[in-house]
Image (tube, rainbow, N blue to C red):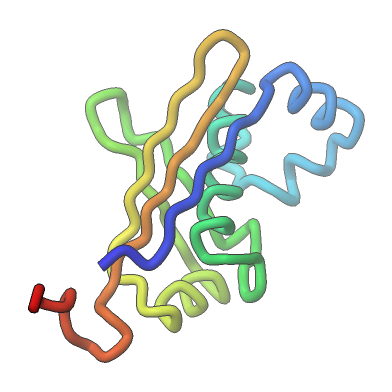
Length: 129
């Protein structure tokens, strides 16, 4: 069953200005591995983290440094690597599977997250009656 869906869109140029104005912002938002990526990829990862937060229904129990979106190559679907408090929060909310789609084009980066898990009673979806 779907537990949450989140989407976020980032203007890459505006994102660049924010990073340039506050250089430590990148350190707070991204892992060392992520910071090696091009700016448009960083913008997409920022969108991915925001989409996850939206899919969870808020940022309680979420730490930006606990969310990584590693670069896996062009032929592999993007995914989240969660650690620490964020991993515990996601598990506590019953999430068993996370799906992520990223894209960037024409100065815009977008991410779409879908969280799946068991129904609150532990069963599957209700059968039609």
